[in-house]
Image (tube, rainbow over all chains, first blue to last red; front, side):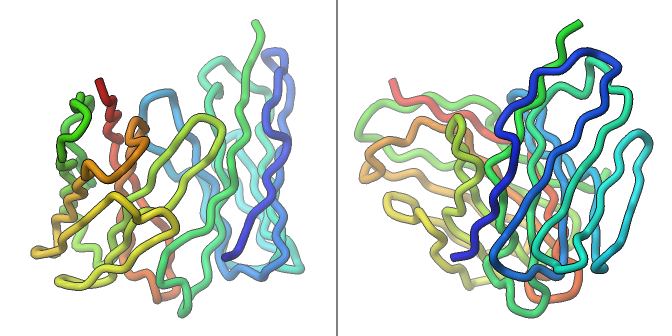
Length: 113
Length: 115
């Protein structure tokens, strides 16, 4: 099946720093989604992208749908302690994704005070 | 409130026993999914269902079974045939897996431990 390469696998940063992570694929997706998962909880949808080139913000989070439709990135500005968690990207194919989304393996964000 | 509810939050199973994990949604979503999450491995698809009374195997269906008798419910049974069942299980739903909106919403998860 389709695969997503998400990087980096983990990040150790200082509070207040900006964060950037990305996902790439060999396949085209019609949808890119970004989720955050807190320990012991289910993933929560942060941002949904539906158009190639689309740039969308949600507070301190900004995500972009790559022009080639094969990649997406997520930026977090001025990180705070509650940003700690695992961030997942997911790609969707409308009209053909009967088994749902393809997920990256996650970026584990750790913030040092 | 609309949402997707998994129960129980924690579940302990003895070896050789079958256990059933509950997943209920009141979002009126057609599609429902079960994922397994192991440390460092991301989400792996176990089973999915696009419509009532129909479901399909995902990537790691062996040792699991599901049913979809009602639109809002998609229980997962972990059978004794599953060799390594200790994991975090996530249920999700989406409006329509084949439509233009593929956003999936997750429950809070069930942590299953074999003792």
